[in-house]
Length: 538
Ligand code: G1P
Ligand code: ZN
Image (cartoon, rainbow, N blue to C red; front, side, top):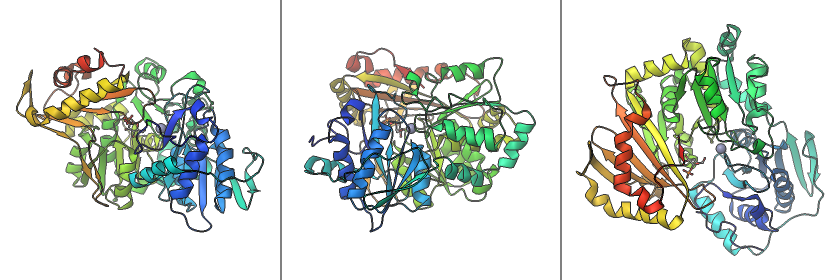
């Protein structure tokens, strides 16, 4: 059996993500799953949650995992019908039914199909991704494991809700949507939203042929009364129709074009492969994920379940500082964490923050322990309904109060790993000498390699990206992606802050020109990667 299924992938990243063909090797997925079962905490009679985004190979791994869970002494497995659970829905099911954890099968926004990506990660009892200590233990176990346990049993029918026995274990096939839809109804003012729908408010939700289709159809069309057809690409497909289920301006271009055109509805939104990311576009107004976090936090009192209980806001380091200004104005705490949702878990569990988000289109709250695409869309709807304004009006009022953080991320994908490593090493070597240097109109105030000490458990995560902060509040950040499956991906994050007295209605590209030039001058991107322009700008 292969003994190193992570092979080349950083152990700290959320689970295992590889090509389907790799997962199809005999013993490969089993090695990972057995390693999880060997190291994670679970008492006698434990419950395991199982579900995924429905991509190619999902059902096969679900059947393997059921047999292995039975052989490993689980008392009960909860499986979403059809093997389906969006990532936030899986988090909710783990919490609601007090499971010891869950296996979430997804490669998020990466393409699906026989030649594309697959992934498995383990979430712990709080519903969130396993913290680094656990993922490292799983990784270590994969390198020494010499056996995996399974029972002899036929595949079960994943499409019939009900209970069947596999070995001595109960397998409960549950409705993947109901618990999640009920939770959303508890959190938000559905009556207010129904009110604006009745008075003509329209939206388009692009489920990108991925997992959120059934969730969005139930909530938006059935419970909130939006017209049939509001949800487009609403049937989950094993290959997402051949597209990248990534809700950004490149892969959700059709939605963007609709929202910028004459027939735009009031709100355009999309979610990714496994339902944890979101895209928000008002009529004629794109909202960056960093701004969305800040705007949602500033208006969170509109939602019944959040009234009088905002304790703090957390954002990942590369996310713009727009949320920090809201936290300051509201007098709540603000945390800057490394990239990756798992760093929010402790803060949420400790009640230190209520809402958190990342620039990569992830926003969420303490209702589950994953980011949640539809949740963000529903909070936007709730706020627009209560305030009775458009997305564009809300954005302008927000900037007039807090100022505007012009922001973009430039991705250089599939670059040579050695070149990317050399670029980062050269940045580290310059850190001590950057302060005080001028790059065009920008002067470096401070440069460092971001390190985070978890305020709850004291754990330290070092080398989380290079920050170059300029006088006046603008900055560039460099880091290598931890989720890519081919070569290296360099991410360059660019930000320029404009106070309320400045130009709040400028072109983002123009506002970031100095930062883009400084990034090239400081990092030598062309020299190290051979690239003169990013592959993706978001
Ligand atoms: C990317 C995003 C990060 C997100 C992660 C998982 O990671 O940048 O914010 O948490 O996907 O969805 P990266 O590829 O940058 O390591
Ligand atoms: Zn995702």
